[in-house]
Amino acid sequence: MGIIVQKFGGTSVATPEGREHLVQKVTKAAENASVVVVVSAMGRCPAPYATDTLLGLVPCEGSADARELDAIAACGEIISAVVVTVALRKAGLNAESLTGAQAGIITDDCHGQARILHIDTKRLKNNIEAGKISVVAGFQGVNSKGDVTTLGRGGSDTTAAALGAALGADLVEIYTDVQGVMSADPSIVPEARWQDRMTYTEVIEMANLGAKVVHLQAVEIAMHSRIPLAIRSTFSDEPGTLITDLAGAGAPFAPPKPVTAVATTAGRAQVVVPAHDLGVFSAMAQAGVSVDMINVFPDRAAFIVAMQDLPVVKRVLDELGHEAKIVEGCAKVSIVGEGMRGIPGIMAKLAEALARAGVDILQTSDSHYSISCLVPENELETAARALHAQFGLGGM
Image 1 (cartoon, helix red, strand yellow):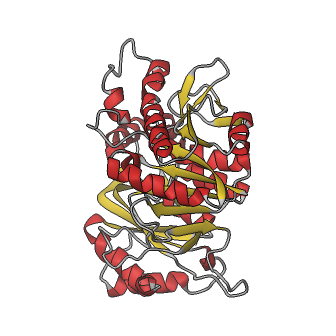
Image 2 (image 1 turned 45 degrees about the vertical axis):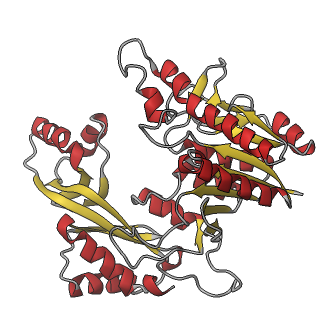
């Protein structure tokens, strides 16, 4: 039999109802494959075992250093692993809970944002051979000194993808409280639809452009390992979204759809500075400010920053003596699609849609797989809906 890794998020493990659905998903998968389960902490703050609740038990400054914070933060997933293991055993399945360390996950020393260096799969493979389901606490590992480390927010997705890669799994399933990946944020574009299939590249691009789809590193690991990644709901039997190399199914020679999604990011400010001193970018980096949508012209340079970084940006500009033009209250709207590369007319259609909707384009940037426009934030919904309609995303 093949191997399937199933990851269940906090809403899936937090309630008896969620755990009942979880048991059903695992039981069904175990009929035809060996299963490894990864779990997140139970619920969200103020739930008693949520990660932020546990972190709130200790001060964020003073004697509680990063090592101690990791030690307590990892407890939420360990609790979930035990609770889920007991639920699986009650359903007649042979299961065993494992911490990240017991599952063989070795990381670097970067507490709070550790990266996985190696996975010793011996214990997991022994369990698979014995017909036992390993229930692994996500979000965590152990460094070379034996200290507990955590992988950053969304790290349980990364745990699942990394275990899938290390075990040579046939599929990694990410179960959450949504049905899959949508063509746009439904709170901004009500016409958004669930996607049956997307490519790794498209989902990575969406994540980079602000869409909260799945943890970025998890998709990167799945892509490098060529393991299909499915985003599904714990609470329904819908197939969800399958993320693979090819978005199309059954038509290998058909051209992919040029645009598959619209991504949005609010709360941005545009900064325009004279181009005589491009040391502004080094100064921003040293101040810890991330800049985006960089355009450099002979007489000026333009970029955008998050609104919360604006006080630091203004201080840096004052120190450099720059008289910058700053436009607050901006947002970024982007179209994403692996099929747009080399296809003429995509930018023309984008500009036409926004002009027809009366949306001002303040700045643009592009890559092989996306085109982004900076627009006034109060026109973001209009822009996103216009682009969604222009590229036929509401009728897939």
